[in-house]
Length: 336
Image (tube, rainbow, N blue to C red; front, side, top):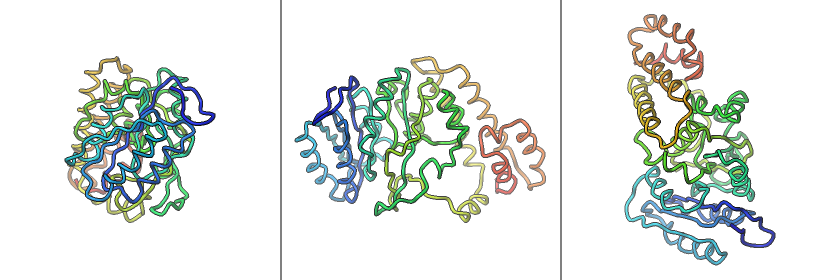
């Protein structure tokens, strides 16, 4: 695809920005402007509005006209009913035609090099299926919140090395770190990743399926200003000590049951992949599910849990699939 405008590079992979909106009029124009300010313009922008009740639909019509005037194809999908953000992205992804699809939230701001940097990785690495990245966190008014997305997630250098070495599946079993606002994926991944199953968010599901197929990586550059505000669908706020303390006292059985169910859903999908997943993935997944089952079986007063918790610590389950001694301490103190 030949880029539009002066001094634009020639790229062989076509691109689609996949944007989902819902009551996003406050920030949408800034995000749209940053997409059109890319050093390499996208081939198309696919938008589905999730039945907004604010001025978003009218604003989209005006913004679409601006993009079309610059030679970008804009496809606005009918949004006559509210699907929720996960199903909204599923519909929009299916409608996109580019070789590389870039997920786009309505309230962020892209660095001018974001599209070109990510697409260059796909150009150079045929095996790459999904690429996520770091982000600069900003507040509702655009002020820098100082700590990056990866810093708030406490992503370690050891985890980053494992991801870059092709061992991202193990990292993603332990934590969700592929934030949709930073994600670009090869459209061929959708053959194995769709439909999105219950219990999984679209970005974490796309990431773990790509990792199972040996095609997951991340960029450490901060190519998105990731806006944090009161109406984020998910967001990435700082966790305060009071949040962690309250979390200690939340009942655990239901949460652990959901984790087991998620693992079983993933295992079933890995069985049904069109392409062969890495053989070690299902083995590692089975071990994780066993870990959650051990933790769900913990009952009684704290001193009755000490033995099983110690054995799981000794076996390495807490370090591989949780946060080590911190997860063990939570299991000792939490209600079950």
